[in-house]
Amino acid sequence: MAGYHLLRKKFYIYPCTLFQNMTKSFLSVIIIVLGSVSIYAQEVDSTRTLVQNGWIEKMNDKIALDVSLNNSYSTFEVKTETNRIILYPNTPSNLRLKLNYRFISFAFQLSPDFLPDNGDEDLKGKTKSFAIGTGLIFKHWFFDVSYSKVRGYYLKNTNDFIPQSKGDPFIQFPDLYYQGISLSSGYYNNSKFSFRSLTSQTERQLKSAGSFIPVCNFSYFIIDDKSNGTSAQKSNNTEINIGPGYAYTFVLKEKFYLSLGVLTNFGYLNTKLTTKTPSGTFTANQDNFIFRWDGKTGIGYNGSKFYSGLYANLSGTQYRQENTTAMNFETRVVYHLFIGMRINSPKVIDRQIDKIENKFP
Image (cartoon, rainbow, N blue to C red; front, side):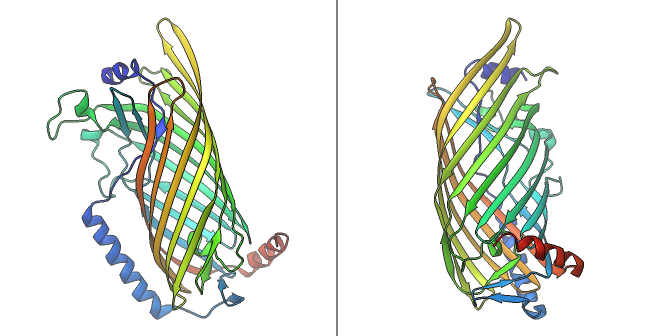
């Protein structure tokens, strides 16, 4: 931990995320599984439930269940004129379970050791992570809420601070905590465009369509260093951003699709940093303007019974810390593979949900 305290004397660490590629073998497995499930699904598709204006098929009497793999995780990176710090959790791959029904979704995510590249604790330390979330998607509006918690990071660029040979362990911070909650909402104006077909798979897009999608995001997160058994350095961060977006789904034979989307956000980030030292406790506040952008693409199969897809998201973030020369930035690529199936929903639940949905035209 001495390495971290030395770094901390030079500048503060603020949150960001960074690109992490999957291995070539893992991508090969993804493509093979995706293709296999899609071919099998064509043989077992059943009849439709409800088609709206010939563009969207509503799966109102189905519950969608899926399992997915992704390489999305929070990291910290700070760059100044003379130094650079990159902190990673030891969780390159995540497993997510999701339940979707009509307008509501629930998701639960963990990072078990048996996934690719996870579990190398001797080299990179131990990381525990957990995330849950729920989403609501109505005819034009959508809302998402999520909570995540991570404990344990390692210094990705250890070799910049101490000599490191191949096989040597990285500098580790087992008591560095991250926890946060995020809320987002958006609006899509085209009634022929199915946002659910891309996110919750409770609908099927039958013909190609796109929509303008403005989005607003709010997040509050805490980064807490408890290296000495107490909170040595803690930051409370609040961010709000808003911006326009656009998405389009190309559909082939009502079952196969290619989706493209772009999103830009302009926002504000407030950070309150508390540092405890032998001579006392010091507090600093920063107000930063932040710019984010995202480019999204995905391919998939959306049958009546089974569905699967492979999505990729390229994003960037940049802002300069107030009153410092430190620059926080992000460039990342995140992959998301999912495979799911639909089962019949209980009729008694269908009737109750009908009453709720009728209140949100």
